[in-house]
Amino acid sequence: MTKKLTGDNIFKVLAAVMAASAAVILIINAYILITGSTLILQQEGINFLIGKNWNPVIGRESFGVLPFVMGTLVTSSIALLIGVPLSLGIAIFLVEMAPKAVKVPISYLVELLAAVPSVIFGLWGLFILRFWVQNYVETPLNTYLGWFPLFSGTPLGLDFFTAGIILAIMIIPTVASVSREVLTAVPDSIREGAYSIGATKWEVIRHWVLSYGRSGIFGAVILGLGRAVGETMAVTMVIGNAPNAMPTSLFSPGQTLPSLIANGFLEAPTPLEKSAYIGAGLVLLLISLIINIVAHVMVTRVLKVKGGAVE
Amino acid sequence: MSNLEEKMSSVNLNAWFGQKQVLKDISMSIKAHTVTAIIGPSGCGKSTFIRTLNRMHELVPGARMSGQILLDGTDIYGNEVDPVRVRRRVGMVFQKPNPFPTMSIYDNVAAGLRLTGTKKGKNLDKVVRTSLEQATLWDEVKDDLKKPGTSISGGQQQRLCIARAIALQPEVILMDEPCSALDPIATAKIEELVVQLKENYTVVIVTHNMQQAGRVSDYTAFMYLGQLIEFGDTTTVFENPKSELTEKYITGKFG
Image (cartoon, rainbow over all chains, first blue to last red):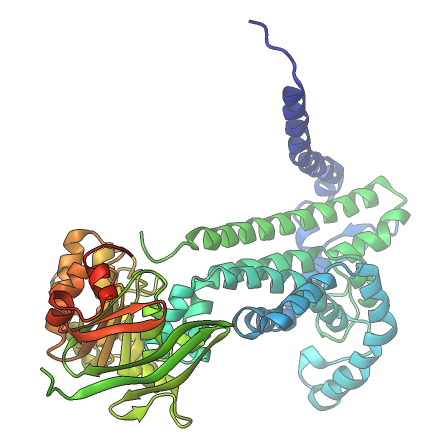
């Protein structure tokens, strides 16, 4: 019996190749980042990670990415602080309260928010939001609470804070949609049980629904964090792009890892500087990978126990 | 038995899901410290009926009702009545055991009391223990109170749900086919428990198992297509039914 290469088999092979290509692309990416950054890592050693000075001027070269790692963490934290409560509110409203006629259009609109290209968020941030933030948030906070280091400096609206707000808006679709899925997966039998012992709607949500979905919600938050960490265009447009700015005040301009790379890579004249940008990319990839793996584990764990009460 | 005090009653009760009417003009009286069984084929409205007794029916989107449900003579659908208070007085056990999976056995029983503001301490420990004892579960779980409520067997889970209801010291306990997901041994235990419960509580149990109705109940209501066809003391309904439909159902000619 000879095995014929039928259409089915061809398709099987093709599909397998396509599936494998995703993994291959990730591996190639990582490989290029690692080999590309060997030069800078040999030159700077651990100083690349903990150094605070990024100076590409020939003869005085020094490459430390710490300010940009910090900038990334600060803007992402602002994004989570603002974006997560909003997203949770949206998810809770959609799953627990909204009548069907409202639920469908709002879910759709929230997801459409994810379809807005980030450069448009950047434009809006640069031309409109920046002035709102400067006039109505930063200036009052600076005037009355300027003694507090986070609110010190001269608010110009192009800074960590504005970048964080833009990121908050950009993570809402991710966090809200995944949280909505997680809350939908909470079995009704749990809600019924809680109502039957005299819980109010608020108590059912707080003590049962959110508690049952907590690790899934945590996963949703981490997915949002992943998005915030990697976002480049919108952040580059509103963060002010100040070199070597360790974030000391929220109202000072700075950079994140992605904005550093986007701003500098094309103009890098020396192999060492080029390698430094690739190294910054490697650090960013590692941060994103860790965040995404954690999120994935958390979310699948919840969706698996969905079935619930009876063994 | 007819001189017993009335605990709950429904007066001209109608209920709908959207456009579909599922209960038609049901008037029925439930006596204190008795077990009332509600039997009938699937879809006859028996589950909907008991869900109107503790205002769980209204939680389903599109659900409506008209008529009255009286608890000790007061309409529980009155404007000034808080459904949360009704549900504390009229507890419920569901078809599928649904202990709270994120809570320990202890916390499952204590959950209702914590909502009313009873904090930790001896008092709570005591209520948890008596509730589990009344649900005949204490001896089986007393060493595992910290384990998740879902870690025990299905029959034990259902008794845990009964303990959860008892902990609030309700006056009435509603049971919606509590044995349909259980094996015969677990079922026998629950049935035994139901009979014991009427000493302290009034029990209404929905079942599609007529033998079960015969074994545990004092009164039986037979429902068909949303209507109450026959209601009376269990012996009469089973041995000498007034309606031909009831007789046919009881003798297994349909359903």
